[in-house]
Structures are given as structure tokens and as C-alpha cells.
Amino acid sequence: MSEKAVLQFRGKTYELPVIVGTEGEIAIDVQSLRAQSGLITLDEGYANTGSCRSSITFIDGEKGILRYRGYPIEELAEHSNFVETAYLVIFGELPTAQQLADFRALLSEHEYLHEDLRHHFEGFPPNAHPMGTLSAMINAANSFQPVLLQPEDDARFMDSAARLMSKVRTIAAASYKKSVGQPMNYPRPDLPYVSNFLHMMFSRPNKPYEPDPDAVRALDLILTLHADHEQNCSTSTVRMVGSSQANMWASASAGVCALWGPLHGGANTAVVQMLEQIHQSGESVEQIIVKVKAKNSKMKLMGFGHRVYKNFDPRAKIIKKACDVVLEKLKRTDPLLDIAKKLEEAALNDSYFVERKLYPNVDFYSGIILRAIGIPVNMFTVIFAIGRMPGWIANWREVHLDPNSRIYRPRQIYTGPTLRSYVPMEQRGR
Image 1 (spheres, one colour):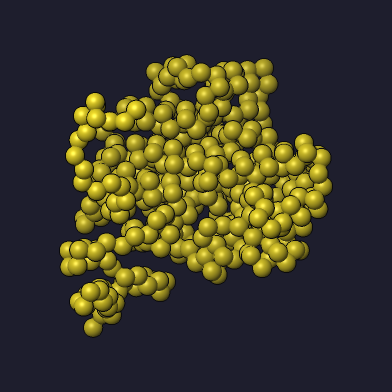
Image 2 (spheres, helix red, strand yellow; image 1 turned 90 degrees about the vertical axis):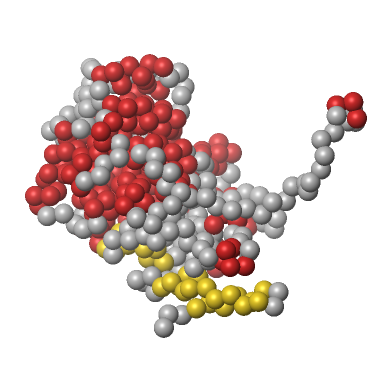
């Protein structure tokens, strides 16, 4: 007999089913609560609400665990790469050699934009943020493959997923070129996924860019670490939009908009902005730490702590090692990077931060690496979007294939005025 949770309210007792996930997570199923009792649950910000059942990503924030389809992020970071990890996240299993080769071939086949799409970029002002351009152009691109908008069979879905994953980097690079007034670059089919993106970002007609192997490896790692992260703000947005049976491209475009927010994908941008402010102020790291720890202080260290992880973010442990290696190999001298290292050392050795579990998170290190590679700050969140695309695609697919899927429709607790009558204009106060 399955377990039940018992709720008592106003003399009545209600039994609610208990659901247990494959990793032992326990949830109370409240789907029938309103029908039984007239009650709803209130959980502002959904901090303690399970919005779906998913087989894609598992997180244990207390233990610092992150797994894609059961595989620890540590093993994927060491042995895999972004394209292989994307295949795993989207399709559920690690690919065979042939499956991976076929997927890479699809990515190369679909990396070009329709020439009419290239003219769309001319409608954006030079100072348009690349994230706004990215979202708009993903939506525009879906108009050029209408038969793939709602892919029913696996072959058509793979084609559509590869198109979206491939074109997003082409659109992203073109958005950057537009913002700096440079001509857009065509992709090179001879280059792998990440190298091709860097080529499209930095090559110029008079100066071809040959991607540095260390920069490529570092960026590939960043994309791998961001491939999915359970039901975060942007992924939940993709699922919600997809629940209306909106197509995959429109749903991903909505995910880009959600990711754009400074509290979500903009966090690594905020880290670099913080470092710039510290550098301009001339204050020492010791002075900054004192200010942060001061009672009632409004100053925060950006890139420290995490909403889910109450332990060290496992992605941060991985990327910290990569950060040290990249900075050493690229021989970059940057005062902001020096400040970042001192902040990291101070926080990791200060009981104030350790006791509160305010460890440097993945955003702290990714911002430093992206800066060292030469990625401009306004492109940081765009990189995040490219990395998160496999997770968005997988989550959209999960909603699309669920025979019990219904349109997402949260409830609310109304706190406005009660019933009142219309007041004619002449009877209203000044």
C-alpha cells in the first residue's frame, strides 16, 4: 500500500498521495487538494514546489551533487565534451561513435542561416543587446522550417534539435558582430562546434582568427557545465511555454528572455561588473571584505553562494581548476583577475563565508574565464544560452511527449479590494 500524507483542516481529514523519485526524493501530490477541500498551496517563488516529473537532471543541493541522466558532472567534465553531453541530455543516453558522428554531421549541415535571415540583423540598432537579438532571431528562424516546428517522430525531432543547437551559435556570433559594427562571418564546416563559434565571433575579413586550443577547451567545459540545471527560471519558462503546445523554437526563445535577467543568466556579468567597481574604487580586497561583513551591510559579493546548493557548487569545483589552468596558459595580465583571485582566497579562508556556505559559485569562475578568453561582457549571458540549449530542448521534448501534459496554470491568493461598485467621474475625489 502506498504511503499517504494526512492533512487536517477545520475538522476534516484529507489524504494526499506521496510520490518518491528514483533518488529517494519525497513529494506530496496536491493535484487533487483543491477539488477535495477547496484549498490551494502557496509557495511564492516555487522554492518548495515540484512543478513536474523529469528524468533529465538530478541535483542534491545539500550534498553538492549534479548529474545529467544519472552521470556525475565530474565524470562528464573530465571525459566528455559539449556536443556529446548535449546528445546525452537531449536523447537520454551517451551516443555510440556512429550516433555522435551523425549528430555532428547534422550540426554542420544546419549551421548556416537562410540569407533572408541575415538581413533581419540590419533592423537592430548597433547598441542592441545580443540577448534581445538572440531571442528575436530564434523566433524569426523558426519561420524558415515550419515542418519541423512540432516534430512528431524521432528522426524529425533530431533534425529540429540539431538545427536549433547549431543555429543558436551562428545567431549569437552574428548578434555580436552587429553590436560592434563588423561584418558577419559564415561558419566553417571544417571546425568543431566551439572552435567554429569562436571563429564566427572573432574572425575579420583582414584577420582570420585561429582558436587557441586552451580557450576552446575552457569554453567547451563552460558549455558542458551549463547544459542543464533542473527546473531553474529559464527551464521552467521553456516548459511553461511548451505546455501550451508552442513549438520548440518559440519555447527556447522564451527561455532566452528568462535567462537574460541579472538574477539568473546575468550573474556572471554581475561578477565582472563588481570586480570593475572594486578596481575603480581603489579599495583593497581586505576593505571590501570588511564592508560585506558589516552589520546591515547592503554590499554583496557577486558570484558567491547559490539558491540550490547549500554546499560547494560541484560545477564551481570543476571550473576553478580550469580557471587556474587557463589563466596560466593564456598568460593574461588583468587587474580584475588579480582582484578575483584575492577575493576567492579571502572568502574561502574566512569563517563568515564558510559558516554561511557562501562559496564561489560557477558564475564567479565562468566570468573570469570568459574575460580571459576575450569574450565581451555583454556576450556572457549569450554563452550561457548556447550552453543551456540542450537542457531546454530536452525539457520541451519531455513536456511534448507526456500524454498527461496539461497547460501550466498556477493559482494565486488574491489580496486586492473586495467587491465594490463603479464610481462616476463627478463623484471621485480630485
